[in-house]
Image (cartoon, rainbow, N blue to C red; front, top):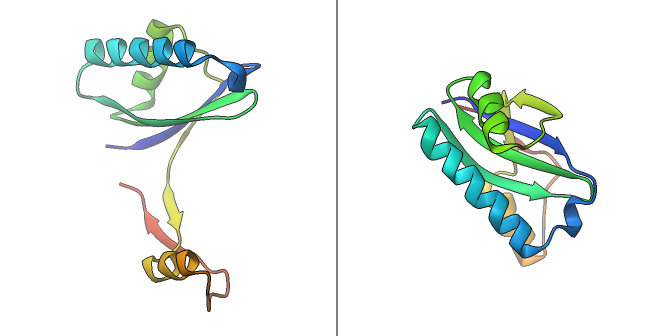
Length: 111
């Protein structure tokens, strides 16, 4: 299933209370159950004035339908084409405080 990054412009997002975050999460899950197995929420990142959400969905249309039903704004939707992350041996070295890396990263194609 394709992976998407959703950008939601929400002024003051980082000031949302735990209860507001909880209610938004519950609403998200409720709508996801209604939409069925073609869409899945992975996680969200809250910044000062935006929330970035990671979803798997059969198509972009479901992303927009989810937001419409849940009442959440969408500023932008982008399909993930590749995933970039450090190779496992670099993660181990970073954790130990020593790295022989030249700052290169590993790439893999997103599913």
